[in-house]
Image 1 (tube, rainbow, N blue to C red):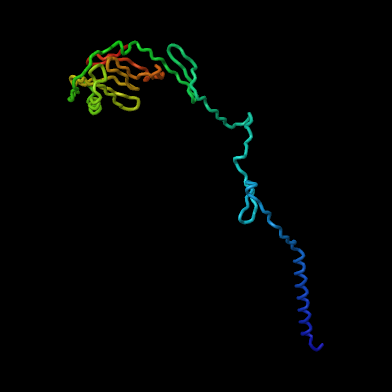
Image 2: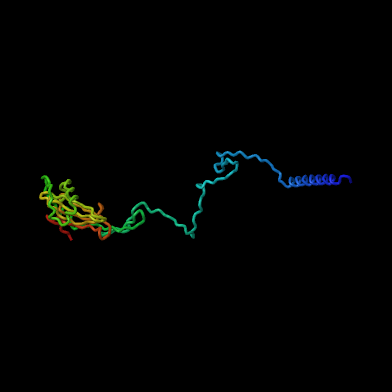
Length: 241
């Protein structure tokens, strides 16, 4: 052969070309056939649970308000809350006390207030019409000097107790009230009893009730809630036992 190298190069090129073509045919035979499917047109108004997303993917969304939970069985440890009655029930009632059940389910014991004396037993007929004094004398009071400002302010109300006296109720802390009275004729200041829940008094009576009960005549059964009666003697208060 005159040109052996030329013939060898032609054979190599032919062999490479046939191999490359056969490889491409093999790869194409392994790929799946692609089919273009149309995307269905949905109407959100007809089915509110299906929404069409902008990326052309379908997503199904469930409304949580439509989900119904199964009723708990008797063996379940789930806490069941039962609302209390909206009314007050009387569980016990006698001459001394009453037991009630409040709307929140709690039980309270209330005692009946049966005073030995009333305002009518210490009537004052005097009608004070003079101008009240403006200068006060605190020397007749043990602790009245601690409440000078409040006592002076009470003069603006005029006579409210026992004919010609002003009465001052001073908040001295949690569950604590102090009191002073002023003789509007002389300006003398006197100490009143301490209380836990306030006072009740009248212009035409010398009786003073500390820790007065509610209008129904009941009070809570506790040591500091019990009502007490005091009568004014002219210079001090005397407790009625």
